[in-house]
Length: 557
Image (cartoon, rainbow, N blue to C red; front, side, top):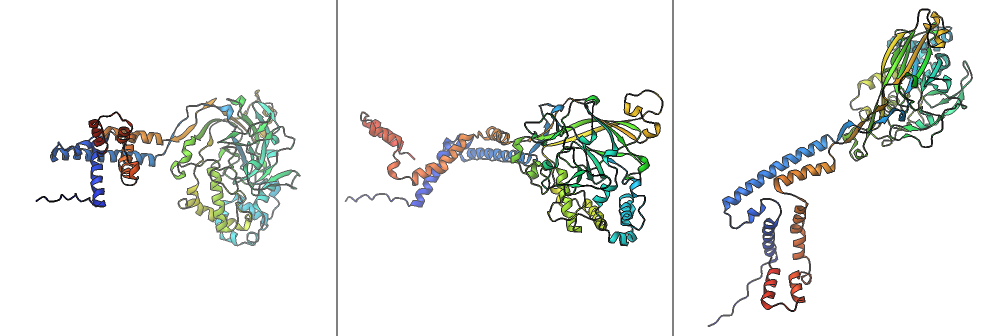
C-alpha cells in the first residue's frame, strides 16, 4: 500500500535566519581577502589544524592592536611638532622691535622737594621710592594715606622725568629724526617711560580714548587709553600709523612712511641709535640701587613689561644691543587640534575684553585685572580696565593691591593664568648687550653731540645702539606631528603586514554583514532574480542542459 509522501516542513523564520547567517559567515571566511580566515572554513582541515590557524590569527590581532594603540597614543599625546621652517624670511620684512625706555628716577627732585612729610604727595613718594613702607603698619593707618584719593598715574605723569628731556637724539638708519616723532610717553609698571614702534592705540585696544590737556608743567595733547597715558605723536608727523600683527603682517597699501617701522637691514648703520640724558642732579629716588635706565624689547602689539624683566643700562657708557629674532609660526593644519593639545592660541581665536590682539602677556594682564577687582575693587593704573565701570586704584588702595599681587603671583595653578597660552604666531627679540665707557680724555670722537659735551655732562649720558646680526631668519614652525594621512598610513601598513587588510576588506565586511542579508530578507522576491536567470530568460538559444546548470549556479546560497 502506497503512502502519500509528505512535503518537508519549512523551517521557521528564526531557524532560517540562523542557517543563513552561518552560511553567510562561512562564505565570508572562504572568500575574504584577509589572510588566514579561509583556513577556518576549510572542511578538508582537521580541528587541530584549524586551531593552529585560529591561534595565529589571534596572535596577529593582539600584536596589531598593541601597535596601533601605540600609534594612537603618540598621535593623541604629541599632536604638534616644533621644527625649523624651510623658508627663510628676510629681516627687512619684519618690524623693528618696540623699545621702551625708563629712567630709574621715580620723581624729579625739583618738583617734589617742597612737599612736607605730612602731605598726601609725600605719601605717594614713600610708596614709589621706599618699598619697605608697604610693610609698615603705621604708614597704612596714617591720615595722609587713609584719606589719600590722589590717582597714582596723575602724580607720576606730573612729577616723573619726561621724554622731552630724557631723549637727546634719535637716529634710524644713520638719519637723525626728531625724537618726539618716534617716541611717545607711556605709563608702565616702572613708571613714566618712552616707547618706540608700538602699535597705534586705535589698532591695539578696544577701549575708547580721548584727547585731553596736561597743564603741569606744559600744555600738550595726550591720548588716554583708560589705563595708559601716552603723549600723542605730532599730527604733522611724516610717519603714518598702520596696523601689523605677527600672523597677518603689515596691511596692504602702505603709505611711503609709516610705523611700526620696518627693519632697514643689518648692522649699526641700519639700526637705531638713541642718546639719553639721565639728569642725575634731578634724582630724588631710584627704582634700583643707582642711576641709569631700564629698557624692554617686545613685539609692536605687546604692552611693555619693564619692572620685572627690564634690562638695565649704565650711564657714561655706549651700549650695543645685537639682536636676534625668534619668530614662531604655525601651520594651518593645527587649527583643527584642540587648544589644550597644541598649547598655543591663534591671534583672533580667543577674544579678549580690552585688547584687540591676543598674546600671552595681554591675557595675563586681563587675568590680573579681574583678580584685583575681586580682591580690592579697583585696577592699578598699568593694567587694562576690562570692565566699563571699573575704577582705578588711588593711593589708599595701594596696600590692598600690593598684597593681592603677591598672592596672585604665588597662586599660578588653578588661576586664570593657567589658561593663558602662548600665541601660535609670535615675534621675540633676544639682545646681546656690549658696553664700553664714553670718552674721558681729550681726543676726537665721531659723534658731534658727544664731542660738544663736558666730562660732567657725559656722566649723565647713555648711548644705545640696536641692530640686527643676520639678514635672514628661519622661523620655528609648529606643524602636525602625525596627521590623518600619516595615521592611516601607519595603521594601514601594520594591518596589511599582519593580516592583509585593505579598504576592499572593509567593502567585503559591509557586503556580507549588511548588503547580502538585506538582499536576502528585505528586498522583495521579484527583485531578487539573479543575473544568471535574467540572462537565461533573455537568451532563447541556450540548450536545456546549459539552462539547468546556470539556474542551479544562480540559486546557490
